[in-house]
Image (cartoon, rainbow, N blue to C red; front, side, top):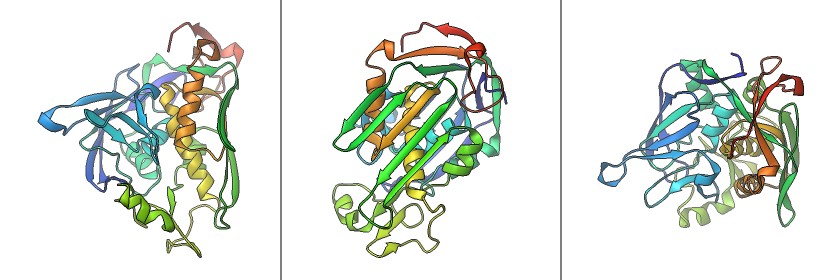
Length: 314
């Protein structure tokens, strides 16, 4: 698969499951899409038999509390898109139409692994159009108290450096940094599950969240440790899941990133906010057509490999 060109799925594939927050069953079909389509959600099953098409872009984000939501809840929205978006981005899939008949992407096992399995069932094909990249030109940073997120220039890759710090010995302080590629995403990130504290469950239920959460799809943290009988998939699964979320959220830039993302105690809100900061000025980024020297997900792009600078307005 030449990452100098755009990609899509070889065929459609279907997934069925429940939403972690809504608890509702949903059916989702991942369809191949034409070049320059990007990732978009076709929300079906709306009142009056209406459908709504929602581009997976930062401009469509309407909520970031506990998950990322695109679209409007009154006229049609899709919640908890980050694990699916992370899988497509991590595998280097550019163009997909996601048909979904409910308000929330199914949680499945709480990670990106089931979405990768679905993509692997049908395969990925290279398309005829050159892939474009969004290249960070200047540092941008957002902060909320001690927490922060920033995007920095990086000529060669999309690098993520994520650190968390929870006041519990079960998690504590963890940090993970990777240069994103399909092999790294599969091996280091994809299987990390969402997590939550048992002490927060009743409050979340009252607020209408976590209605579909269980030990089958969430790492549950009790007073004395992990509640899941099988334990953790990685010793630092918590920071790896935060990294997974960041991959999914930052994919809402609309194009693969060339840059370095750093965060400390971040989450969906800061991930979204740093994209807002990036797009607040056209001088912060440029869009390039690039031909990588070798095959890799986010392209080992050098100045010599740049074929054109595209003066598009995001």
